[in-house]
Image (cartoon, rainbow, N blue to C red; front, side, top):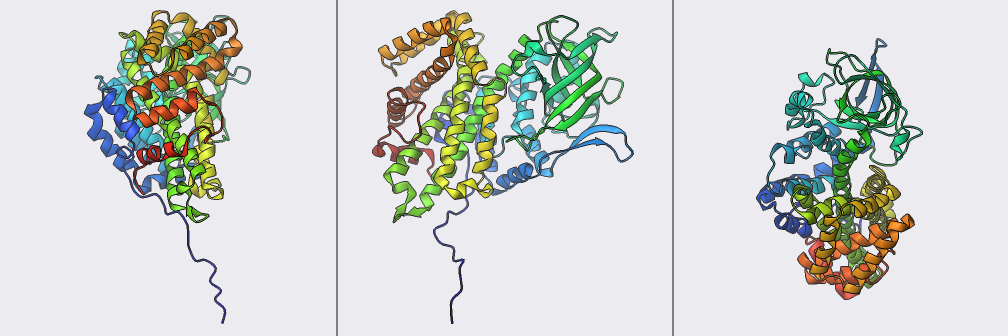
Length: 544
């Protein structure tokens, strides 16, 4: 009698346990307390417990496995331009709105409000990233919209509502609302000056009708979009384009198709045409690009936060796997080469989180503090460049830790890896933001000097290294081909200074040894001593 049993389960990694995403993340928790949001500690503890439940991962899976569908017409043939989402998407969005990620610093301004919201954003991003796209656009639209008193008075209660409302109806009939963006055109790409969408006066003060085509219309289910168009031969202006006109008609924004994207699949992006779409001028005529760049500055901060979230999720998955999987007689984590790979990934994650929370601190204080102004204006685009790119590389390495098991969809690593590039591409790809760093260095004046002085005061970086960086900046201002090098080095110097000032010594020592003295952009697991990795792993993931 043969025993034909072939499916004994042995040496497999259990599903991650329910855990508190906030309490188990020492770098995030310490940053919240340090950067002025200690008052939010209990609230974030509650968010972390909710988001660490196994059911959250299933919602994320469903929202991405069943992406939105376009319904252009109703059964009777009337044009409706609606989207259908899986219920899991609406559940995720409802929790995001309840947690206030779309508005909390505007609704309850206080010291640390940006930091508390940033920490919640990082927690949410570890569960599902596509739902953060309409969240960050809605959040970033508020500073622009509140400068228009008449428009703001009609939208304020809806934009600052904690109630997510997915009904397709005029804003006046709803509780909450979403705001998206419509900038890019077929011929435009990053050169927004090349847009061809036209605006002509519609009769009322500040009212226009738009005709044109947008190649990427972000979150087309939103209740309104901020759109670039040009009136005659003038430079582009910014317009507020609602889904419904004031007289209750569906606005003439025609959804042509949904984009079939690499990642961010739970969220919709569309190609649209404006057929005399009703719009309201937002800001100064001919200053639309400058207006939208103000909005983009907030969304770039969220790009960094979102990448820090993906990094954290990937690192936790890799460390959990390495602690439960055995190979060659030992746990993976006990092999020296695996230790240095995991330790290096942990360093990347902690440095990203620490910098992201300091940027949130800076956004609150930029008006009054030269250092905060420099961090906001100069370091934010640099961080968007470096942190978002490193997340792509790091998540691929996390997938390799899991091997073939990481390459299949059940592990969630493929979804994390697919999500990561959008943070590098959206709101300015690498060259665009690197050149923006140079523009900021030229124009920031006192703020740039405050940043240089702060770096030298921290004594985290040898003076000759800072001298070399100053020389690099001087050359780059004459030779823009060095812009990427400047952005990379600036972020590494700021991260090193922050970790030296606030992280445990072993974290700061390992970061400086591998990033400032070694191959900063090399593969992970190069330059870190095996003995330095163990304490990093214990700090990063205390469970298991």
